[in-house]
Length: 230
Image 1 (cartoon, rainbow, N blue to C red):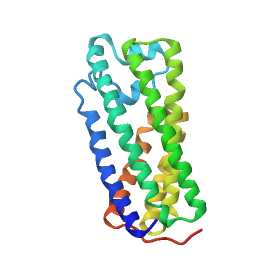
Image 2 (image 1 turned 180 degrees about the vertical axis):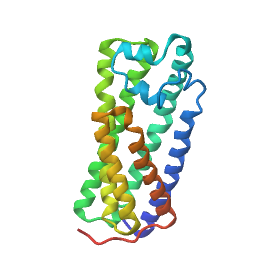
Image 3 (image 1 turned 45 degrees about the vertical axis):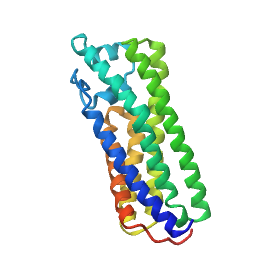
């Protein structure tokens, strides 16, 4: 990959990051998305329900219709816009580094791209279960039994992907090393939180994504020079 091509990819990554941020902000403005005043993020709370009884308590009857309509809108936004946007951003940002890397690191980039695709597929599968749950609310034990592992696998794998993306940036040195360390630590924290305290994964997930978006924006303006092979 020549330098000009890498520069174009970094600029595309910066643009993709901007689109992703705009779409992520759209979720909070969906009418009725917080109708039931769920503790924390209502979309995450819906994703993490572990039983019909928990779902029933999450969205009480007096606000349920408005909340479930909003959740359906959020699922459509996620399926058709946000999931493709974050997938495209991560893939472009990974391949933008290709020319900087050794053969060994390039193989790792291919593996990470494949992992991003798996995360996207898990997200779409999760959304199909959530749509069924919204339509049959509060659902059944069997349906939530299908949803439960998919959500957690998605978040664990995404956390690990972010951690490894951060590790790639650490190898570049300079400010990228600092940003990469933050992304790597927050990504690992996200994966761990998904297992031990899933309702607490919002903070590390936001730190990892936020740092990666800012770093990608900086690299879009000031693309990196090739680094030493390893």
